[in-house]
Amino acid sequence: MRRIELLAYPEVQLLDVSGPLQVFASANDFRTQAGEPAPYEVAVVAASPRIRTSAGLVLEAAALPAHGLEIDTLIVPGGWGVNAACEDPQLVQWVIGRSRDATRTASVCSGAMLLAEAGLLDGRRAVTHWGRCAEFARRFPAVRLEPDPIFIRDGNVWTSAGVTAGIDLALSLVEADLGRHMALAVARELVVFLKRPGGQSQFSQTLKLQEGDGRFDRLHGWILENLVGDLSLAQLADHANMSPRSFSRHYRDATGRTPARAIEEIRIEAARRMLERGLAVNQTARRCGFGSEETMRRGFLRVLGTNPRDYRERFWRTNLLD
Image: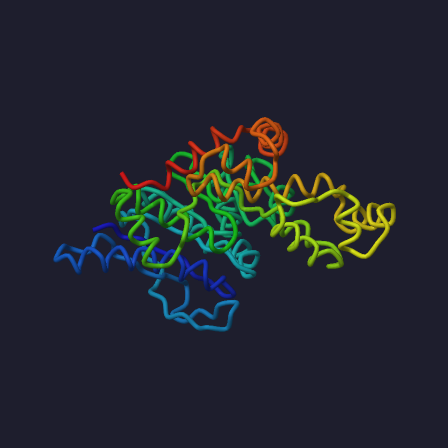
């Protein structure tokens, strides 16, 4: 049985704890229902027996175990309380010592800051929530921060991006321990429709376009529904009830990009989702309105640094049953 400890502290993010916890609990359920021993012993541990999360829910936790007792995995969640946790020297020392007892150490979301404060990420590749990347890079320059991936494994240390990425990380830990079939079974049980590989981006281009003042949100929705239609400047301007010249100016002010660049990004994001589900490259190019495979290939290389065929091979195969 593999012992897994999830560290809790005041104002921890609830889903950072409960998401991975449920993944391991579901794996236990599958094994015990099959008449086999549970593979995991999971404990939420903290310096206090009751921990109030940032959502207001109070968790009951076991005491911080003493150093020297070997465990399989230590997971450090994130949340708004992580800054205070980083300033607690006793907690930081406990993380340092406990990580030495663990076969692997992991963080969820901004929990990477506590690992970095403990010096566990120095010289390593790591990721954290996109909204805290600038702060993280400023505070921990010795860490090789990568702001894009869902999760990263560097040796025996795993870090994951924002909140729900902790579920993706936990599923990959289950896959490493118990195999792909179990990880996919748990993903289906939790209604996680796509078991995302670590290298997949945590960013949504469509969400990025909505970071402006909201004037063009409905237009973006219309574009998504009409990727193979007429998306000329004149048509977009007409849909926005503006002249083409006025539309171009206001759109760039609101989104920071030209309409043509935005359409390309929306098409590429739609194409990624189709390729991840296994759709053929030529069908994807046609359904997303690229006109040709070559046009889509150039767009992928420009935006993602890879071509559609390699992207499909990398991500679709990761989600296939053995």
